[in-house]
Length: 482
Image (cartoon, rainbow, N blue to C red; front, top):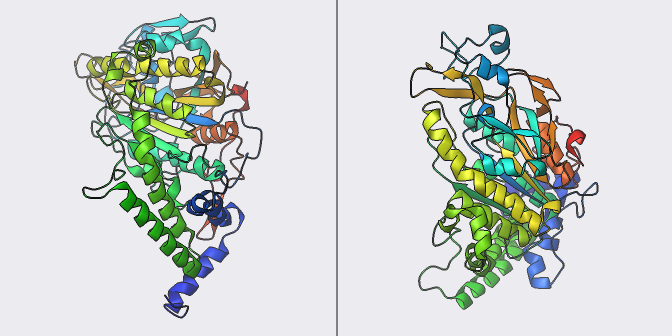
């Protein structure tokens, strides 16, 4: 393309690129130093735009376990004797009317309290209350930091999930994993820096790649989905008739063309796309090695439970997460699907708990026994919680619980957080927060801080504005840090 071709488009592109200031303007430098050009020049590993970060890091990597659909905090971690004592009685309007209801229950004429579905026990030396639904997680209570005062404005799954992962309720913003990859770079050039895995069935709860997308950040920071299939990552293997030398020659030619195109357009996305092709080439060897668990000792497989032998289960994904952690992958999100229990919670909730209880506990213990937990942050929770009152009639076998964003529980482990510790409190109905509220923006600000990132200083200029994961909100929750 000649310099005079498409002058309006060229001028527009140059203006947009040169208008970027702060960290946004460093995306090209990050791609050159650690991206596709570094692969051909032998330059050093990609350290992102921040290198070692703003503050001393407590952890090097993150594993987020998201129970998509909203696990009931009332039936798992937030024990309230009042709900047992008042089972079947009307939820006091003075309590209930403080929170927004979803359309699923706001037309009800009665709001009877539904007691926890199973008893709670105090676990470990910390005495944390954990439901009998989760005996394995209860057995590691002294490793956990329970945050019982998380809250969000949203009561519908799609905006709440996007808000949790991107800090905004609509598609188009970078996810936390993309921000971390962009800021801190990669510890393993043969694996994606941000991996996503799913298990279970969605039961109609929306989920799309916007939750793990890059938004306006360079596209090579996109989360890569590992599937339960012969080919865990789409489009990595060569098509029929294409051999490795052919693919290598094609990528070399593509890199040469990309250099020329980048010199003409100064568009960093050109290099970002080529870096993804190169990553796919390297993953042809690295991904099968990670997915193959045949070298795992029998006692480790037993730790994760019988489902670990079945690809695509939460147990198998937790084991692969540990293997990815050992290989230097910085950010992982594991979705456990199927937690939207508007109906038949008495039947379905025990099934979901059984699927995730042993594997989640095993992941924490496996990381600890390998010396990885101290610099890995594990988080476990949902986009919101569920109501202490019933959705439907108590005498209906199909009774359930509705969405509730006003106060619910997450737990964290490792990564410099306090172990055997409980932070925040809801009222006697597990409905309103009465102590130490933690907003979703606060949770994300704390996550970044643990990785050595100041959430107010990690920004990217896009369309004339500096954006960040926590928007213009969020505070680090120092009370949970060891």
